[in-house]
Amino acid sequence: MRVAVYPGSFDPITLGHLNIMERAASMVDRLIVGVLNNQAKTPLFDTSERVAMIEEAARSLPNVTAQPFEGLTIDFARRNGAQFIVRGLRAITDFEYELQLAQTNRIMAPEIDTIFFTTELKYAYLSSSTVKEVACFGGEIEYFLPPSVAARVYEKYPTQENMKRIAEASHEQN
Image (cartoon, rainbow, N blue to C red; front, side, top):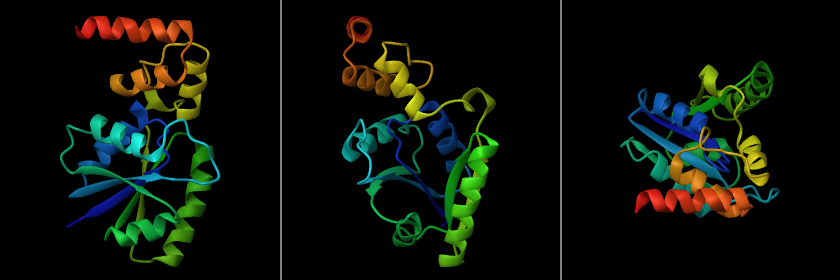
């Protein structure tokens, strides 16, 4: 069985993340999305919320699961019997950092390879940090996130514009 882990903070999961998940899931039997609990950062969503959002967004991908982890990605990969670590690349600046990580991981665990996916061009600019900044100032984020995730982000930033969007979405569902 080919198992891969796709680690990250996913705070929140974006359409770019989801695109990488879809593509990686088509190449392996099981894809485990590892949601990093980084003690050095204060995330917008706690780990269990991020896991739930990923599972909801990836509902159509039967071989994808999400679970929290702490510590080294390579240890997480080993615990899950993974042969691959999946990483996404948006720009050349990502590559230098990711290459260093991949080479370090390869020294620590030569049996585990890193697979890089370049993002689709329409997501090349997209980051969770950018989405949070747009939402913080009441901007529209539906272009960047799965709908259920966008609603949760709006709730975290209760600007007048965001509360209006939440009310409209609720009205449309009824």
